[in-house]
Image (tube, rainbow, N blue to C red; front, side, top):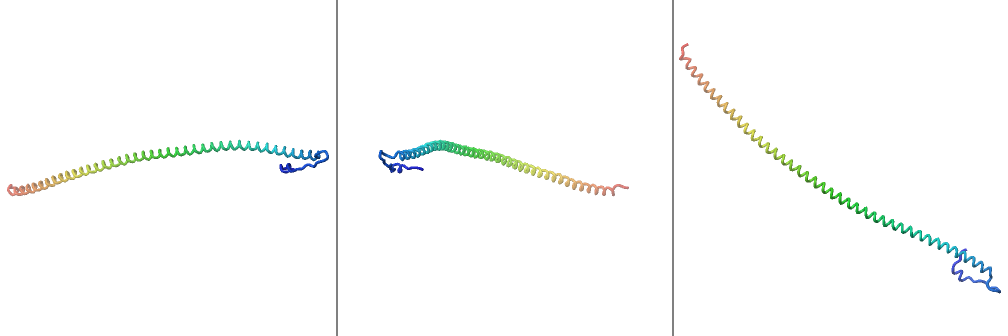
Length: 166
């Protein structure tokens, strides 16, 4: 049976002829003693539990601090990695753009060279056609001239045929 502080204060002991009833006082003392012992054990237990909880809390606070630092560090590393990746991507893009520009420049240069070669070949074709036409004209003219000469020679030969006795 638990006894409260109010009950202890308000408890009245019966008086007897020579003072208080010894048995009642002893019983009351025993009851109060047990309650005090129980309260002392509970206080001791609660103090120990409080100390354990405070230690556990300190560990958890330390872990929380460590986790916060780890998260902050991880976020910084992630940000650094993203920044590095972004810079690397920009460098790769710039390098690719330079290579693309070089390829385009070479292709344009090659195209220009091909156009120049086409123009040169066209000029050669025109020269060749002109030369062939000149040769054909020369031979055609010569053939006509030879035909005329041959026809004149045949006429002369016909005229001489009448003059030479057979």
